[in-house]
Amino acid sequence: MILSTKQQFVDCLFMNEQSQFCATYKELTLTSVFQPIFDLRGQPIGVEALVRIQHEIDGAIRPDLFFHSDEVGFEDKLNVERLSRVIHIRNFARSKLRHLHLFLNVLPSAGEYLALENIDSSLLSKRLKALEIDNSQIVMEVVELAAENEESLALAMEKLNECKFNIAVDDFGVNASNRKRAEAIKPHIIKIDRSLMLAYVAGDQFPLLSGLKVARSLNAKVVVEGIETIEQLSAMQALNIDYYQGYYLAMPEALEAVYLSESNNIKSLGDPSQVYKHLSLS
Image (cartoon, rainbow, N blue to C red):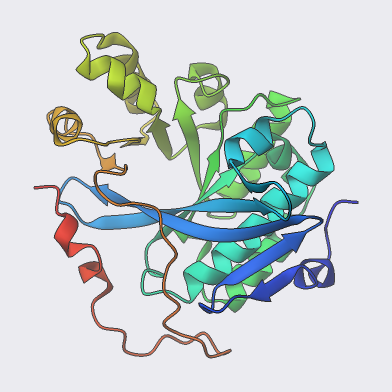
């Protein structure tokens, strides 16, 4: 059964001791962490939401292995992805960074499923409106997995775009995240896979420069992922790339819940831009 009603989602939710929304699904517990994305000036422009999956017996499960596994059924992958999005949005909305962009991973199969929905009246749009998060703050990252039907995926992304959501191609240069997909879905952002960045700093510049060329042809902004050293950061800065993400800049972590009222009207929280001021890229 694919989770589809508000009550089905609510039944899976709980709040932990740190006032973070979490979810249970079958034998799994899902929690949120967030990794910031910075501009060239070192200011955070958004955070990528990442799910942490804990099996009640087997312990931690890497999300990439879970979503790539042939042993996990389509419904389970889709439900975990949708529940992850539910807790990510709620935790983001209660944080100091709620004015930034929120990057959410989307399975191609889930994107195809979205194509069948009226996005304007979907639970996603209703929840964002209730939390006073604008659709334009959300960046839907299509991950590198193959789609059953790339045309349906492109249609879903077009519908999301029409509803003011931003679209990104994740891990560009790996698997199905290629030029053909980028040209089909016309993303606002292309996230360059870390492997292209590593190849570039090792002397093989063509793959990354080709990715930048694709982005320019589509008028898309570029995020370089997986920056782990100052040398890698400096090399990417020299290319005047738009945005940067990686462990060298900030580790994924839970966002502190600073506003717990049901009304969701943020009161004085200070200057949110100062949260990551010690991580200046300059």
